Length: 201
Image (cartoon, rainbow, N blue to C red; front, side, top):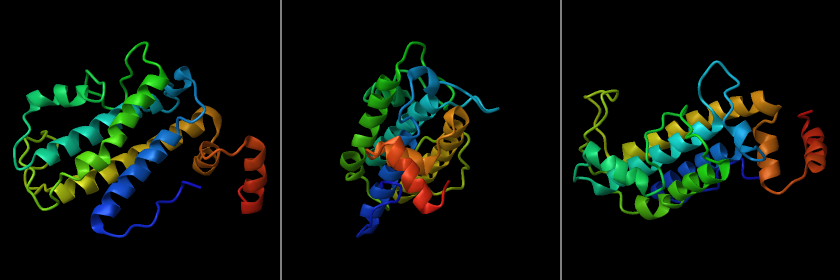
């Protein structure tokens, strides 16, 4: 079952593996949904699973790309071009889903961002300072390095995977264990047996 992060052998291995794992957990919340379901906002928040996938894709690719450029700064004017590398043209906070964009297209954008983790990540110096410019929401006294960027992304995607878990459960009652089991090729009938064996039902 892909619910747990595989074992790791080094710091760089741990950083890429844990980020990819959290991305996988976020993606799994969309398993079996239609485009319309993935865009639903069934909680008081304006967040949707589709919106979170787009936001996470942009955040992961943007931060890693800028960190790989360090110590060269990445001006804000470059970010539309960086987002365009994975197929995005606008900024996404987790609530915006372009009209007419199918879930298959959203997942393809997300997968492009995830597929760049190893290649772009290999160019990041963990100790190199990240010169920014940074958004006004980031405190000015934080020393941002390549290592900080990795840990920030792991926590950011994990937080949004949790948001998506709650949204998915509100849509059809499915939760993380079941979705991981189904995404790994199991059937609903097999899950019912497994859940009973684990004492989850």
